[in-house]
Image 1 (cartoon, one colour):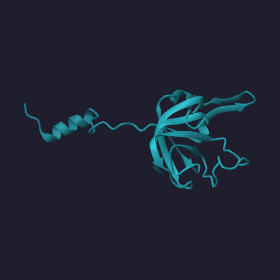
Image 2 (image 1 turned 90 degrees about the horizontal axis):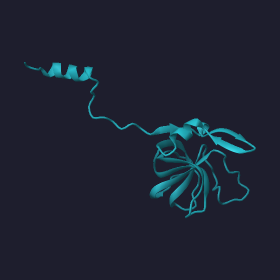
Image 3 (image 1 turned 180 degrees about the vertical axis):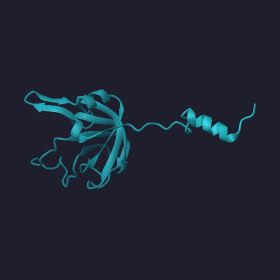
Image 4 (image 1 turned 120 degrees about the vertical axis):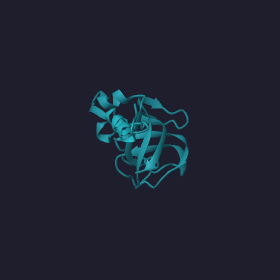
Length: 147
């Protein structure tokens, strides 16, 4: 029995083989899908966010101006901010934010540039022991790329 190259390729195609398996990208989360509801008793996380808890996820947004040029932590917002939300007590803090804890200290990018952040999704109230920052939704062990 002899096999031709063409026959082998056709057989592999029929089996669905298309080369090395590619790792799937982490689930994309939109700012619109973070919460299910807000009310007098607080808020509820969306079903999607709850289902992704503890998994790798990615979200696209803007870095809020950081406290220092290099950090392991920043706040991701839906829209770019012109001022540091930590620096002025009367600044309106955006409702739709995600706290990002980087794998390592990283130089930040301009607040007007969109970034895609990937990390492990954590939800629920938590206080970071190093910064004292309280968050509800976080990506930890994260990295980012300019979108």
